[in-house]
Amino acid sequence: MPSVRPKEPYAAIVAGGRGPLPRRYRAASLVVCADGGVARAHRAGWRPHVVVGDWDSLDLGLVNWLEQVGAERFRYPEAKDKTDSELAVDVVAERGFRTAYLLGGIGKRVDHELANLLLPRYAADRGVDLRVVAGGTLVQLVRGRVELDARVGDWVSLFSLRPHSSGIHTGGLRFALVDGTLTLGSTLGVSNEVTEEPAWVAVSEGELLAVRVRRPRPRA
Image (tube, rainbow, N blue to C red; front, side, top):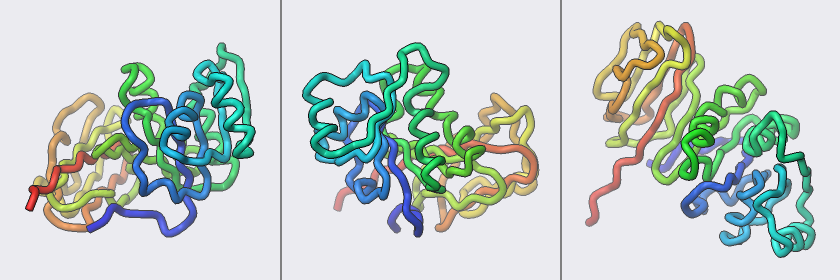
């Protein structure tokens, strides 16, 4: 079964992390590059619609290319209160998109990586369902009931973002939670497995991060 895809227009945020850009997100209605993401978009043949950041990763060739493709550019001072990725989330929210994927937000520095993994919570407060994608890993926020972007055999881990998240119910996972509780820092929710599709998670009090790790399919 293919990944869960939004039925409405969605945005893609290209950050400056590692790895190739997944082709399936090239159809995004809005592509926002966060500074170093410009070079990755250029290599992949993507056309950015908006660029945000302090431009410390852009050389003259990339600047000229942005002018050629007509990308909107918003430059910020290096000493600023938000990361380039968070500025990109702001653009997505201001332009009315309710679903977005952050690509390349993992892989360079642990502090930036952690900041990006927590961005789905910030985005949700702005009305955006942001999912962080890195290779076969996808991270999404769980508030209320959420269908997981996962297929049978994938690993799923759940982490509480509050001191206590309770009233947790799951469906389609090997180790079910029924009115369960997870606490901040607990590893209880690590390495579950999808057994049925669609798999889902619901939480009554608190909020969770759901981390899906794609299990490679055996070769024929």
